[in-house]
Image 1 (cartoon, rainbow, N blue to C red):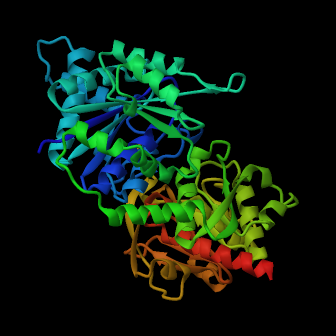
Image 2: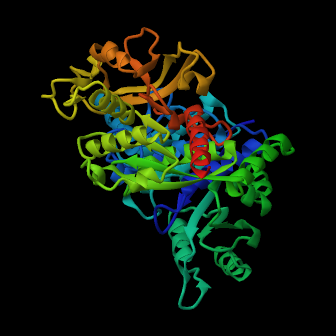
Image 3: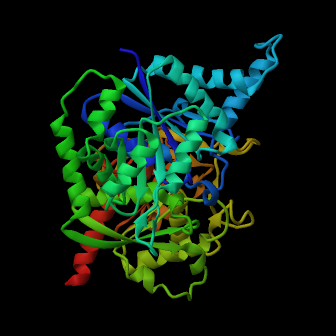
Length: 539
């Protein structure tokens, strides 16, 4: 059976949740044991999002194969419980670069190279190659941006052309505002978005309506009449208590059966084991028996999408431990002075110190780490967080008062963190860090790391240029810092742990491999330690 295609398009505005809708359809098809994979198009002319500011773009998601991709890939993996590959990410930079490279090599001799047909043919060719090589039953193509944008207009045209060659189901995600003044769901914006798609030669098979409340029958009827489709193809996408309930919500409306019918797939029965397992996780997320408070310490907390994977990893760990986690976002730049008010930290049951680049906020992170260690609050440091845990320990416990990272203070006498040797002569920024899945050895069976993973060898994803300075291994070990994880060649320190209490830092980004059905082990251990801390404070 040849691959079927779904194309997801958003109208009116960005941020409606195309990634979540795409992931929910991937999960619905997985419930029927169909093999479904995503493709994501982003119109920006960057080759990838690796050099983009988190404030503008949200977090950079890293795959096993070293690809730096859009954060929607994190949503896909968390729903599918499957690792994806970088060839599923298409950007304007990759596409234009490929066409120009072919033109320079003489691939279009005698032709005037244009958006149509050369760029659109390039897009179609790439999509078809993905289908040919990976052989999914369904390929779901999420089109970044909004219908009407210049940045994605050529891609939408390529999708129209794709539908002339293959079975394609088009889905339009739109927004239905409710005005407080009249208390009515307004359909006019959705109608405008639909009309724009018609101008592009695309008539959606389904219209998914994002709204704050349940989609009214009268609203469905109005939209169905305007769009000339049946009412059951107007799909409600109201706010949910957890985004992981959306596949179940869609299935309750019969969206799954209509979609499978439109795709012309061979009928399958639902895999009830998969569905019931998912439902159990959703129930523990919505109605857990316990409750704790965890602080996320970061440099970019004004845009929560900068730490989307950290937030979701905590939700996954909460579902595993049947615990609701109340998150507090702590902007580290507000804690740069030792005499700042740290009462918000003292009130937490657990702390996560996140990654980042640049000097701003790092002293605040160090101060919060010190406060957590002194107060016995469980702490997990990720990437930069791990590096600063080592710096704080060197200052406080080893008497190396000017200890720092060479990234932040090249003149420091005690550079606890230094640039990787492999990074010293690199001049290009994009895709040049230590990236992707890397193995780590955990030799100490009494460590937090080994207790978390229950394995001597683990693999986590990385994204960094700096490392623990091996010249300080023995000094800090003598003062009680535990170095509990190393690379296979023992050249790089991957895990550090406090001598007392629950404090662990990892050079990796374990949040990137956390899934709803397979939580990141370190986050589960942090939540378990936070639960114990909460109980100890209650007695």
